[in-house]
Image (cartoon, rainbow, N blue to C red):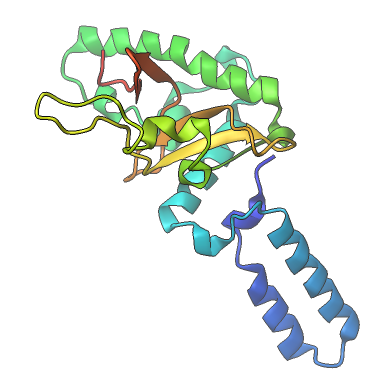
Length: 211
């Protein structure tokens, strides 16, 4: 599934320790080189230097969430666990309007089905993701491209979605063709939105404070 090397220590440290502590052990040095080559080669231009701390935390959170819901029935998934650990739902849970809070909780089930369906259909081992900024020039980046935006506010400012805290997900065997985008809440690194709406050509994420 996801490239676990991005949430582990830099493989360069492994190589350094191998060389320092085993100067005469050529076999272990070669193993270190092989591991380093494998880690960097499988990263698809995603070395840790290209990622922010938020990127790595959000990637780890997505990895955990996908593993938690994969091939599970709705009844096998705890909402308490979802909201506590993986999905940003705080603004709804803290809503003092009980009727609205309960209505949104019901709507969550419908919307979250699409995320679960995506994970199940692609397959845990074939699903991966990286920050959408790495797809500049690809069609999937158009909603985030200020220069290509054809929509303006009443004040004349261009309307476009921000690419911070946004990941594009794709099939591991076809990384050049992302399938969709995911928005994360920057403070908690939880998943905040997984559906992007198109209103007259202007695209934006469907978050729970919109209804």
